[in-house]
Image (cartoon, rainbow, N blue to C red; front, side, top):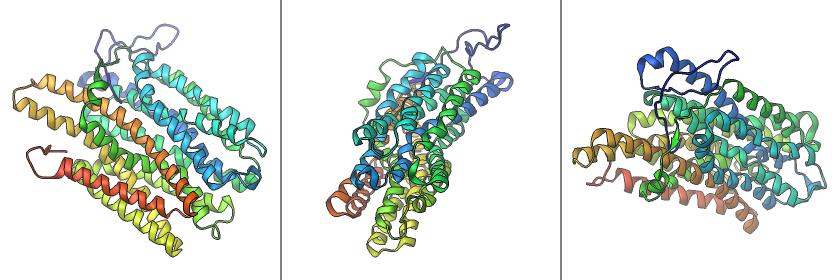
Length: 461
């Protein structure tokens, strides 16, 4: 969902004698008659297949969140090395989000979904072959980095589904698409738990092996049921214009705090549990029973953030959400020092809950920012309503593309913070203090930019 814009053309979807063409030359989701007779059915079909393909992509992206639990003493890797293995997939996934978004307009949503699904085989196949004691750390780093291709799938999937739905239904459709993808994080951890519980830590290669048929199925389903909309295009200069807008970087900072926390904690949670409470979690299986819980809650709660933002305002929800995240990180810090596992678990699950809520509320803020500015420009006579609406869509899509890429780097920062903290003091205390400081910065920025009374305040954000 970035700089893409559909342009209506001529006749409707054509069906040659040999079957469906998978090319829609006339797509008018805002036309009520078209939507009722043709559009809704086609859009729903594309949505459900997209959710599945994105889910598999997120699972592959998250493979190392569970793979590190298999890497016992025989692999010779210390905790700092393991945190690095969970940081590099987040880094590559963040880098790929922007080009993956643009690829939808360049190659078509169906075509790129097939390609991006098959690219998941690049990390999954060698992981299924090479993961065993004796493999070098350098090889593990390469394999971990390659799983970052799954992180790009989210951006292209959102960009594609954004084209299929009318404005009044985009929020729900994109929420389902995003939530279905995010659940890929706890899903792969449940797969890892099943492998650990049945065959132990001796066969880490079984986890990526489980996903090989699912990757192929995602590619085949995309080829069979998805469609291309050739009229979609990348708006020239939209990304450059968005990059010059201060709100792009403000929202990117906030998205680091929400989505970055979700993906970073999702990758690191299992390791942190084992390191902070080694006596309680002597084996990877013990930790794996809880590893999936936080990402699952964070994924399921995400739509609530959007609904609260609709009722109360995105900036207000985001502000109080960051206050709650700072409090949650403070509770985790206190519990870690006090060796209270119950409080620790409550605090960490709270961080997952509020990262999910924040994901939803920040996404709702982005279009509201540009709608408010567009309305002001119309009231001042600087734009006509139609031009203002086009500008709003152009800037909203571009900002979401940039913020999604920048926000994913939060996953890198979380894992690097844990790594450095354990390296320097053998505890995670310094990391928790850094998180508290970041969330405090986020709620101060939210208040100063979007909530502070004054002539520059944007109404409705």
